[in-house]
Structures are given as structure tokens and as C-alpha cells.
Image 1 (cartoon, helix red, strand yellow):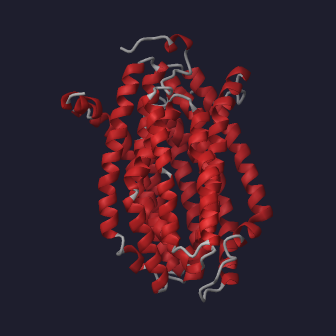
Image 2: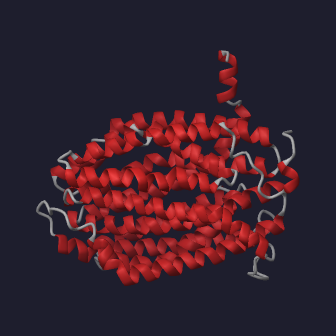
Image 3: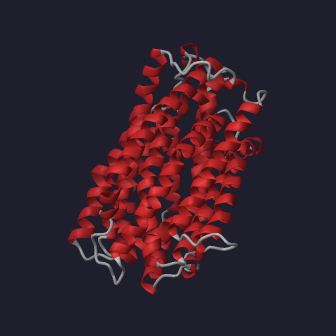
Length: 473
């Protein structure tokens, strides 16, 4: 293949990138601000002490499992939403919205039951290693204080995801961004007031951090829901959506069959990530603190390729739904290449700044050193992580959810978790080398993902039988 053809295959024109950025930049801004304020939140709690920061970090790791279950469950229906919107089938779109309500409600109820019944035991799983001088019992107490209040915000979080995901899948990314910005502003202000007790507010510590997060969740929910139901021109597809909550049985079955692998995938993958964190935690409380710092900081950088994954789901999903199959293939190829390029640039910046962020925290030198090394290792593998996300979302856009299940969570539990368990418990390897070996194991996933995308098994219209045989425009 000539150089000109290679460039044409992997690099788009100005109009193409303008459309990609139109979709992805608002998502980047929302996620970036959210994660930056999470970083500030983390720093504020971290300045109280290592035990407080570690307790909050453990709870957030557990809540992360719930968040990804919601994301995964809604993503299955979201594949249909994007394609229904591309096909201008608004009745089908409303039915998928109703399905999201039922599914998210079940996940929410199950999560609250688990956290209320087993929260103490789950947190304790992360506090069985060496304490490195830290007070494990105090960390447990702070964690439970944070968890009990945080549960109050889960219903609002769930409603926000139902609405925001639907808006994004229909091409509206600015409103969720604005709601997210408002929410993080509320979170930041009340963190300042309630953690430290400024301006006559009580100093609540980790309880104040949890209360601020709950307030921000309800603020975000109010903005998104009110906007969606007062802007009927932009959200005409939601007209009459609550006249019934019934979902046609054939569609419900199709949504369940397609979406279940995604839900199970996200549940198992997030549980796998929690297990990896638990494996690291057996090396002591300093590792818990260092991993928390690095994870919070890296999330600020990682918003770029997370947003690019959403761009693939939206742009490619619309083309598949409209029957423009060749166009979908071309778009996916170019966005994947763009994602890897951006991820490489982000990795350079992340590596250069990695020693700076841990210095802000009020923790000991060992925890800071571990955090810095985690960040450096993460930066080196950032292009690889970008490629994995891009190929995953490409496969998912065409409804190949069982393949993504094998690609993601099965690999996690068959390869990554056993490797981390063995290395953390039966070797004396420095914890960063364990992380590096886990990333190197993902090289196999990179190869598999690239091959599957190239074989075009994901190019599939799942909402219109006629469109499946349509030729590209």
C-alpha cells in the first residue's frame, strides 16, 4: 500500500475531525472537569490524613463497580438508541429509554442491598495487609462513614446516566457537559465548606466530602431532566415517553440478549479492577494511598480517549443505523488512529508531570514515591490503553457485545487477576513491576482487538433488517 493510500486510510479531512471534536470535546470537558474536581476532592480529603484518604479510596473503588454496572447496562440499550436515532425511528428510541429505566432500577436496588448488607466486609478486604504504621481500624471507620452517606446519591446518579446517555447517543453532548460542570462546582464549594468547616459550616471531614458529592448528584440530575423535558424541539423523541413504561416483548428480549453481555462485562471488569486494587493492597496502606493518588490523577488525563470511545459509539453507531456501512468502517479506522495519536501525546505530558501531583498530598514520602512510580508506568502504557478503548468501542458499536465480553472481562479474570494474585502474594516484586507485567499481558488484547476490527465482524445494522443489506452511500 502506497504512502498516500495509508494516509488516506488513517487520516481524515478537516470536516471529519471537526465532527469528531464536536462530539468528543464536550464529553472531554465534562469528564475532565469532573475528574479534576475529583482530584481536588481527593487532595482535600488527603490533606486530613492517610487513613481518611485510604478509607474514601476503598469506598470509591467499590462504588466504581456499581457505576460501571450502570454504564454497561445502559450501554447495551444505548447501541440501539444510537442506531434508532440514525434510522429516525423515534418510537424504538422511546422504548429503549423505558428499558433503561427498568434495568437501571434493578441494578440500583441490588447495589443498595449489597452495600447495606455487606459494606463492612467488602471494605475490610482491602485492610488485611501490613499497615505501614497506619491505623487500619480508623481507615475502616472513615470508609463506612463515607459509604453510608454516599448511598443517598446513587438514585440521582442513576437518573442522570439514563438521561445523559440518551442525549449523547442522539448527538447532544453539550447539555450533559453543562450539567456536569454545574455539579462539580457544587461539589467543590461544599467540599470546601463541609470538609474543613468554613463559614459557620460544621467540619465533617470525610462525611462532608460524601455530603458534597450527594448534593452535586442531585444538582446534575435536576439540570439534565428539566432541560430534556422543557426543550421539546431538541428532544422531540422523548415526547410521550412516560405515557407508559411498557416495553414491547420482542424488543425487550433483543435488548436483553444484546445488552446482557455488556452488563456482565462491566460488572466483571469493574470487579476485576477492584480485585487488582485488593491485590496491590496486601503490600500495605502506603500502596493503597499511592494507588489512589495515581488513579485519581491518571483519570484526569484519561478523559481524552474515554471521550474518543464515546465518539466512536455515537458517530459509527449513527452510520450503521442509517445503513452507511462503508462509511462506518472508514470512520472507525480514522478515529482509532486519532485516539492512539492523542493518547501518545497525553502519555508524554503525564510522564513529565508525574512527580508533581503526589507532593500536594498530606501523606508520607513512601506513599508519594509509590504514587509517582504508578503514574510513570501508567504514562508509558497510555497509547496501548487508548488502542484498547478504541477497538472495544468499535466492536461494541455494531452490537458484538459477546465478543467484547470475551475481549474485556473474560481476559481480566482468566489472565490479569490470576497474574496479579500470584505476583502480589508469592513474589517479592515491587508493586509497580506487578502493574507493568499486567500491562504487558494486555499486549495480547491489543493484537486480538486489532484483528477483530480489521476482519469487520462488527459492521452490523441491528435496528433495521432492510439496512443490513444496504450498500454504503
